[in-house]
Image (cartoon, rainbow, N blue to C red; front, side, top):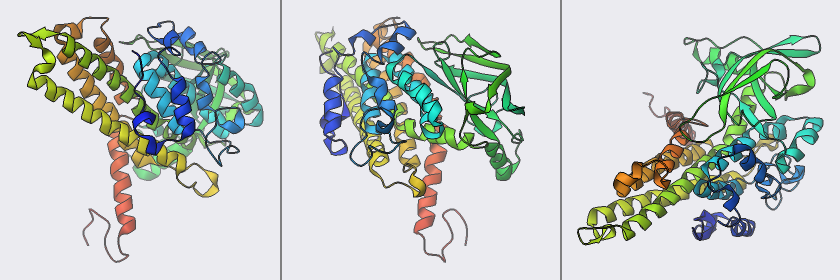
Length: 426
């Protein structure tokens, strides 16, 4: 690979000079130590001080990378377009590195948003250097997409809290030094139905805590994956933490989790685009080299049709991701200084890019024929690597609900006052 396919090169309308400078540093040579590496701990460390990639996970005001004009003093502003470029590059070079990078962001951004000054001083400099790796402990055996139904409990005891419960499918678990743990500090949401009021109460009962992975009462168990990926199960049994370990207000955990996911969801689409770009490159190289029936495969009309579909879907996905990232970075802030939410655009980008990447990589496998399913070939590996992206940080099905909710709300807002909302009879 002589050059990485990065959106800043041919979609400059969505990017600025600092992004071109970042792209110039994201070369195959610079990222070569990550390519093919299987030691997750070494990969995680290298993305810190040697490569400086974690700087894009922390606001400039807290020691991270520049986020653009007028945002230098914003203590919550991360540049999503920079995240897009980094994850596009990592998706092409090392999906393992991409997964670790993404969860390093999820495991540190709640500290950015809701941490005390003491928590930020203790955590963020080491996150930047790679000496500290974080994890985002939200998912449970019975609480995946339905976050409000989580059962891990934090109960008040003296001047601290005691955590009990289980988390599962938590990335970075074998590597993590700290865990952002979401626990119930009030009544649980109804397990069966209960209406919007019940779900709302469940959400209001969730609080976030910053927990050391080696704290007494915390145990971790790695889970085997179909691809190299540090992931595991966490158990909390009488884990005592001081009140100073709390992130934000009591009952503010659900909002904090959603703000964090909203900031990083767009970049999942970028990682998918990186993997799809690598698959397309591999497919083109194979069909131009491989000869059948006396001619290169690339001479066959059906093969050319596949390539046309793959390239078109990839460009459409890159446009959706770039649009969402640009809007997130440049849209006016909401009241109170919170970053502008672009939930509908982010969901479109995440949904389309991950689904398109699955199709593109599947076609790349098909174009390789039998070699496409031989373990160790690039397209076979990508076929396994892409699948989790359609699930984590909101499944495709959840993204569809977010998109539908957004477009219906916009339509209702544009109606004259005397007209019924869409889908409701007059």
